[in-house]
Length: 228
Image (cartoon, rainbow, N blue to C red; front, side, top):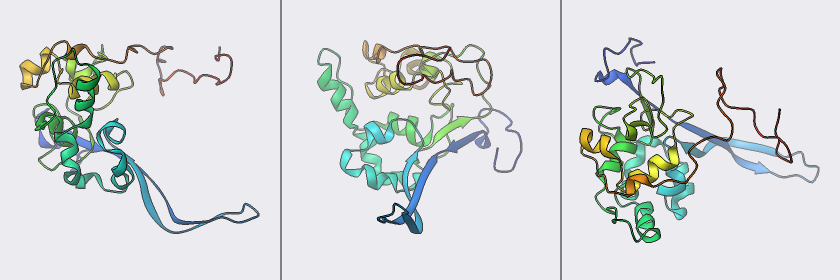
């Protein structure tokens, strides 16, 4: 998957890190007809994108979401203030007044985690872009930890995104300056206590993963019973 199709020499090889995002587009014009034979015409326009989880949901303000969804990840510099002065951190401070206040300005740590990659883990360069980054030279973990890199499992989010990574807990702790002792010691990231224990209370799936691809359990039926 590297640019020159050669295997990375190690985790610090600049070619080892890839960045991924997905987007959805629709045609610019939709014409509705009485007989329900609607037509779509015109160029394809991007209407949504996703790199890192929860950026559109909790980082980008409501009034800018549609505009943000139409931009290219490489142009994320335009939205930088929403990362360095995060609304979510202010919200955490308001909702949990008994906790130490997380910094709400100059959050360069979030820029590293979400826009450039973390040096020594998945740094892809100085250009800021909302990409899901993966260091392909870091081997998968045989015993994944749900908090990923926050708990010393460098094969987990924000280095890639595994099915078992507890994205909500990881990102809430990051925005609350509760990265945990491992990343505090390794990278000097902020680690307020007990902010490093925040979470949504959902630490396990209701059904175990399958041992083969696509690994996810069969979806619930949706009405009144589960599949056997």
